Length: 185
Image (cartoon, rainbow, N blue to C red; front, side, top):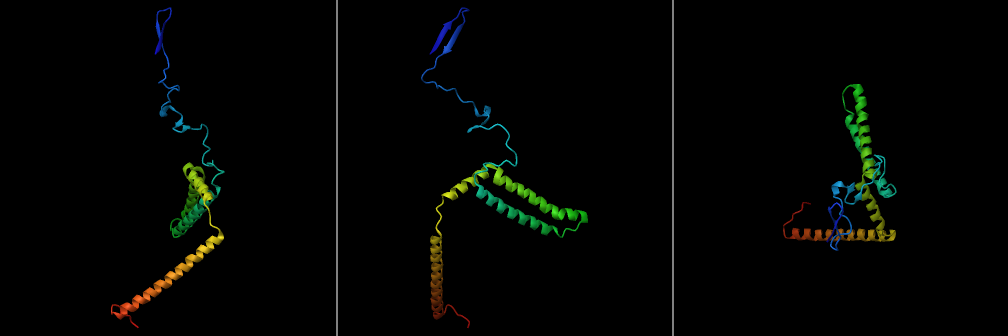
């Protein structure tokens, strides 16, 4: 329904009235005009750059483990490059620059990538934080249970080895008896 009114200048003004079928809230803006994505507006302000850690108080242990393993791999790769560049036979000045320079450059680049993956990249950091959270939920066996289980596995393995040894001897004797298997003495 609408209210129609006429004012002194004889112009007609139509004012729409809300019905029960119309929503009380105005329609949302289309996603292309909003500041952010479908989950709300993005925070305004600086991102902090390369050295800004994402959620620094969470997932410390697994991040440190990731950095330690990554550092070990980067050090190994750097040493591998250094060893491969030793036979380089060029100008002495270039050889002195290239032989240690490329491994050091590799180490610096890998260090930056490892830092970025463990502390800056949001998806990798969220994954590591979630992994550490799940590891805390695990019900770890006690030392006594682990020792008991280890004994059972070792004894079962020895029993299976003995059983298979006996079966092998039986089949060997059987096949020798029927002339299928001839062993040299």
